[in-house]
Amino acid sequence: MKKLLGTFEKFKKGLAKTRDNLVGKLNQILTGKSSIDESLLEEIREILLLSDVGYEITENIILKLTQTLKGKNVFEKDEVINIVKQELSAILNKAENKVSGLDFQNFQITDGGSTKSVMIVGVNGTGKTTSIGKIAYNFKQNNYKVLIAAADTFRAAANEQLSIWAKRASVEIIENKNTTDPGAIVYEALDTAIKHQIDLILIDTAGRLHTKIDLMNELNKIIRIFEKKLNKKPDEVLLVIDATTGQNAVIQIDSFLKYVPLTGLILTKLDGTAKGGVIFQIVNKFKLPVKFIGVGEGIEDLQPFDSQEFINAIFEN
Image 1 (cartoon, one colour):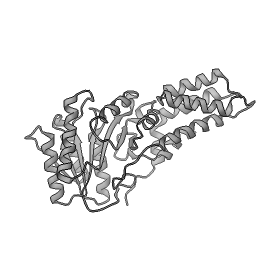
Image 2: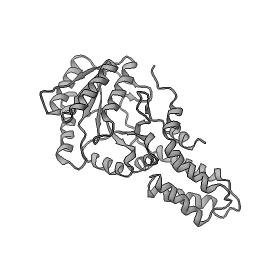
Image 3: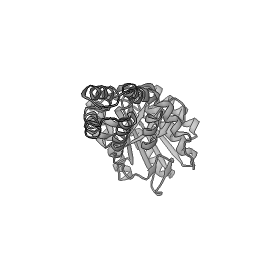
């Protein structure tokens, strides 16, 4: 069974900027303090907000700190850090995981029979194509028959990149340079998947701004093709989000949910931002699970998301 090793160390290294911005700064302002007052609470509030955890979560944490520690003659700074850690950990547990038969932690298919499918959506530049390549590679390592559908008909470079990943992963790819209709490519790919008893099909889609209604409706068309060919929606519809966009990630998710039945998220470029706290805001608002996080460019830097290891990596000294 193939499972990525060193997850905690990957998280810890990739989340260094977020850890410094959140826990590092909390440690700084709490050092030498022995009591909670309004001034200190305001400093804590500012650190949380600047980490992009969001207003609602920030105020809940401030309330918890006030109820627990205000009025105590003496407190340890670790008490404050632990309260913040517990509150943020509880938020990640709110995510609602759909039972899809796909175990992304171990890159396993947990119920056999029909072809499993993952559709990847998102705006340009988030890392969709690379994410598909890495997912394909890891399922192939577990000896599954994997097929990639190159349904990004807008960007030739995307298909070239996907072809390189397919070759690297030793998986089949369906692409058609004679059509600009992504639906036709998906239709052909699903036919191939059925005919050759493919275990997992991964659908790449063109990057699109969430404000372009015609392109968003195109995603709906692909969903309908799935329903026609497989009598079901894709088992997973994953939205790839660039973590460096911060608050804009929330707007993107809100928009995509109006057009496609998202089942989870891939959060990329976490190693390049100090605002990884946006992950808490996203889960709190949408209850969508994070399936993978990207903490680097290497093939093992797209890590299956483990909420406890993620929390521990942020709060590790």
